[in-house]
Image (cartoon, rainbow, N blue to C red):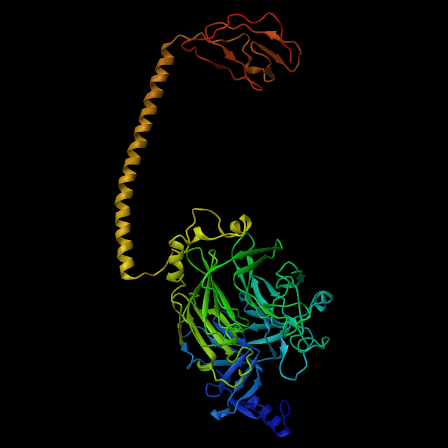
Length: 582
């Protein structure tokens, strides 16, 4: 019976821990330095949590479907250890060797995962108990990597336990992170996630955006009442995108439902309009999309990567779909800031899997685990994974699948089909929701998108080289004309200025210099033409003007300026009789 072992089996299992083997429900798996479920035994791995940092990829949680010794009899097993995979050396999905790391944290499905690569750690929170097991208490767990593919688990103490205790342990949340803050959006709570809930799946939807700060250990729960109809999302995806002053949380796919969820109330979300959230300003935005949109899917996986041409691409793979009546095998790419979808080469049908960006060049996406089956995944436990050990490698620059990983693959370049969309003026056709959204994604008209670092065919290369040569000739010619024109203008104005100075010198100007000269009196100010007054007296004194020019008095500081007579000078020889006051 599942979960029960005879004393003899328990004894052998204990001895196996020290002697190089382990027993799981009567099935022995060889334990080596690099050890995992075994290539020969592997059938499927559902609900895994996958994260990559440093030189290793880590797999945790979920359920393993094994076929002992290739017998064809499938057994579902708990994942009682954390697995690691070396990213410093090349491997294929057949030669990859997983290392097994002892685990003290509880075994759960669909965990929320946040990583802190600066200190080689990742956190797990939430998730659903496996099988008939009761859910554990609400806890946050931390894995500390040792830099060699090993590590250890520990429970994270909560400084403000009262705030933490108010949170429900969710499953099916959309999670992502920005630097040292992790986010988990909505999800659901059932009798398999929380002891205080007695309703089985689909349980209750959980509105709200939960955040956790790794540095301060502070939790918060932000209202999501403005999000769509109910403020809820089940089994969707979230990505943090580097646009706007604070970055934005972007939510993709999944389904929505009222809080008291039923199978009939859960409605998949389309891709026509995407919702974004500024976690600092706490403001929602929406933006429409164009292009080849994905079908309505839940339980997909997604990764995001920054392109060299001011773009950011999000790759979305697989997922279960009532629209398709089964599981998707397609890969779609959402490119920002264009909000345009592209379709890439398909993989194999799968849902409840996980994806992560790997390699020094951040060009490869690893898909691990997942299941296939009908629209409700009813036959998911009987179909073997077509990929060895559940590993698929996707070249995001070429938009195609491979079965081998290259740690030294070149840096990610925006795929040609996406780059061409931008260089052909695609941004001019984006219909922005409003100026506020546009300003988040477009900083200025001079910015170019998608053009940097993209490979091209020989024909395109020759054309571009020819265009550059023509451009250089035209540019040189135009530049020469401009230089000559500027030089001519400079000479013209210099000569004109010189003649003007000579003309001034040749004329006799009777300069007005009243006595005493007022430059040493700082508090003089002009009142009316021909008069001046000090701050020390309210009396005004008339000033006589001699010569053929009129001097104008300054404001606070006395700086005398004079007007030269024109062709028809207007000369007033005498000041008016009356006195002026101010």
